[in-house]
Amino acid sequence: MMLSKKIITMKKLIVSLVLLAVTSSYSQELNLPVFTQYLADNAFVLSPAYAGIGDNVRIRVNGLTQWVGIKDAPENQSAYVDFRLLDRSGVGISLYNDSNGDTKQTGAKLSFAHHIILDYYSKQYLSFGISYNINTFKIDLDSKKYTGDPGINGNRATSNNNFDLSALYRNKNFFFSFNANNVLKKKIDVERVGEPDLLSNFQIYSGFTFSDRDNNRIEYEPSVFFQYFANDKRSATDFNFKYRHYNSYEEYYWVGVSYRMLNDQFAKPLSVGPMAGFMKSKFYFGYSYQIMFNDLGYYNSGTHVVTLGFDFLQALSSCPCTDSPVHD
Image (cartoon, rainbow, N blue to C red; front, side):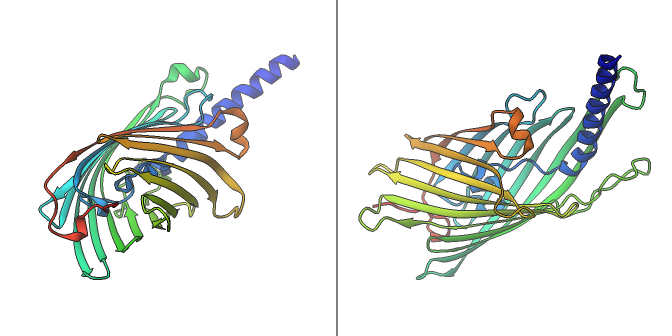
């Protein structure tokens, strides 16, 4: 009798968790998980304003596995390409596939950026970016999984269009970017009462790169990333630090660490993890690991992010606002 009650209680708990995941997943729609992908020398992940900065056509492919050890844990695959257009503009495209239990979304972003010189001698530049987003969001509720509860069945799918707007300010080795994702409200069907129509989130990414006094092939880069979700007022902050070492061929390796916290739990880490990567003969590899410090951390072995990339040379820009930094 006691065993039967425990089984019933466990079934109720599982159903409750499923319903919670389905309900909360709507608020995640069009908001892909941001861990440390942007730190793999690819800030275009965050902001379209970075498109076209540099002397190369950049290709980056990310694979993210979250909460390893938990069944149906979130996974994400994404690809990014950006390159300069003429001397002062850039274009890019992002493709992604994201799954979180019974929720799945796929989509693409088409981006355009324009870069201007604020002051030539002090190396102050201002960039503006815009992305057009198309996203397909699906909830797969197979009634066979939840036998005995007729309320949990059927599939739900919807497609949305939206826009991102961004700005980037650079002053020598200092950078500050602001990004507004999904600026338009979502149209809600009449029968889908209670589904949020505000999918906007706002991001700030800022940092400073400085060279070692005795060796200018060595760089240090502290940075901070802030993200705020308009619908439920959640926010989180990352504190990051990277060490980068170049050789005479512009190849390099780097190591770093990232610390994430929820802003309503100041000084209590949500996750902490090391990062490392290298660029060799225009091939890029990056890896990061994060371990969770909340209650979920007891049931998984962390989150893993792998980044692969290629850089292809293109004609050098005649405008310093899109130049890559040169390390003598």
